[in-house]
Length: 336
Image (cartoon, rainbow, N blue to C red; front, side, top):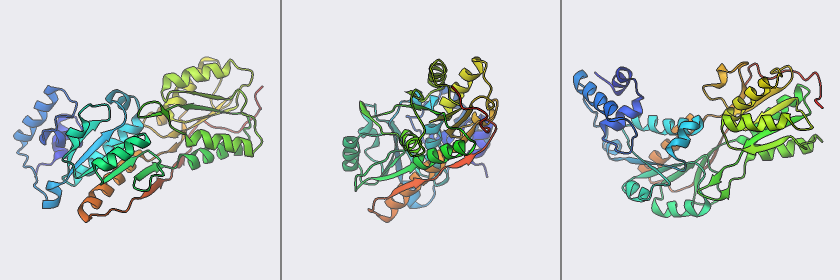
């Protein structure tokens, strides 16, 4: 029997994309040539669409994304969350409806959905509005104290603390922080647990942060720029804690351009464990944030809650795990 995976392998696209094309999902951004190739391949191979159970066939899950399509392409973290949601839906024959928060008609697009998975940092008022729009809803990668909101987040605070503890165990005292600034649905700045953990840890261990904190965007270009600025300062760190792998990769490039070695002169650690982190030189030590699993859990919660009519909200926090590679070493000096 021909499967969606067979079609995906032959066409060179993901199973989720094949499913959405065969379900005539107009929100999927693919070329007309790709769409035509998938449909023709399905026909040639004799693919027969499964009807599934009554509940599965009738369940429509909406994915509302806080960021733009371009931002998703630049940030693998959010891309993996969406893939987790979509792969769960493909495996369970759930119809996917996708929209962006910036779409003027996103509510019209999602109006017939049995449940919503909202990905990203939504402002408090947006969350309240969305709960009224669809009560079966989960927010991924967004902390909220709202009693009616179900959220799933990665435990970034503990991850940051573990990363800093690891560096401190290697003898580092001059530890820099390179972070990014995010905004919730507009101008509301999102509090970052990674920065908070850094500030508390450094203060508790009586370590100075003067001249060692930089914030910009969650991109490699930003990491490169911040590291360049840091290396021109009065205090040169012996270690860098980057809020994301993308920032860390840019920082590593800047360190090397200044004639410094990693990890002999400066150790680097970050959070995410994206696909590139294993292939940097040296390979990047990082805290693995299970964003794909977050997407799977989110879709599962909405699907189960919809079928069983569960109304109780959940607050779920997923732990990170350290992946030790070659970008950190024992400190042999304390900078200047």
